Image (spheres, one colour):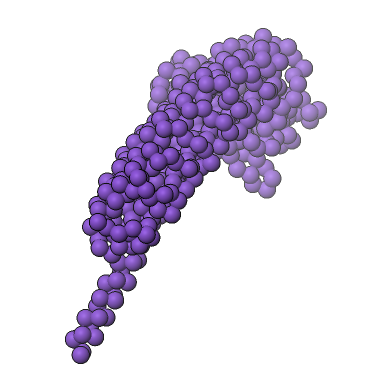
Length: 432
């Protein structure tokens, strides 16, 4: 009697363990965004005002920034802080034998066209040093008692007047600083739009170094102008060609997808091509989700989005995008076939089961499509996950004809008697 009781308890325990589904894997944590290169860009310390002068503005940056442009390993440090309401800004750049150092304190007002400074708050200052091409230039700007600015300017340690040549150099320095930081985007973008429209802004962005600064210019452009379809396509193509940071590419593409419908196929194709530049599965998935939120997506766009998921190593992120594709859409046979190919390439059986289930519950598949899904799903080696898919099939579709044949074939792949019997009981069928 005692042995029988122990055996019964053991069998009950085995049954209890057999019924416990495996715990789903925790989703991966999203990567932290990179630190922006110029925090000062959004600070109240930086202000802009019309210039009372009308200088010939430089089209080239100062020598140090020309030097940095030819060197891919420029070391940069950008820092700003506030202490007792006193803002400080410190920049240090070094590479290819050239260097730039900037130190500033207080509120700084620059000319809208970036031709120079127009004001520095009382007790504030603005100092820069540049070493390049065998020359060492230093500039100090401080407020005078009458509110004007006083300048001190040195070349190779020798004092020089702040004349036209000095003013031209300073403007070219500020242009270079902006092309590495984007600190003046909110002033320069409206000015560029006034001069040459969106194409002038896009041409300037091509001169900018650093994805943070590029993304800042794009953001101000989107807030300042309504772009036509051809310009939107140019933006997307330029982003995909010129930017390398997944976070910044994703940020710009997300802004595009939120503001513009991408109604034409060339724009959508360019959008998918830009996404394919991204290496981060999280960022790729996030931007694909933005695109897939658009109504009336074409067959080609859905196929392109599915193809993009196959470049993702993370099954969780791939599954998230595929589930989005299945939601509230009628998928034609070609899209379903491509969808199933992407699911079959996943390694996580939990994610496979989740995505098959999303397709079964979100779309009303034809009998032929259910047969294809069953043929694909039967390769799942986890008895629990395969059983979960088959249970969903039996609760949403008629298990007759070709569907019934494919269902029974898939059920025979389940090795666990418990899981197989559970599936058959749910379907109302018996194993033959």
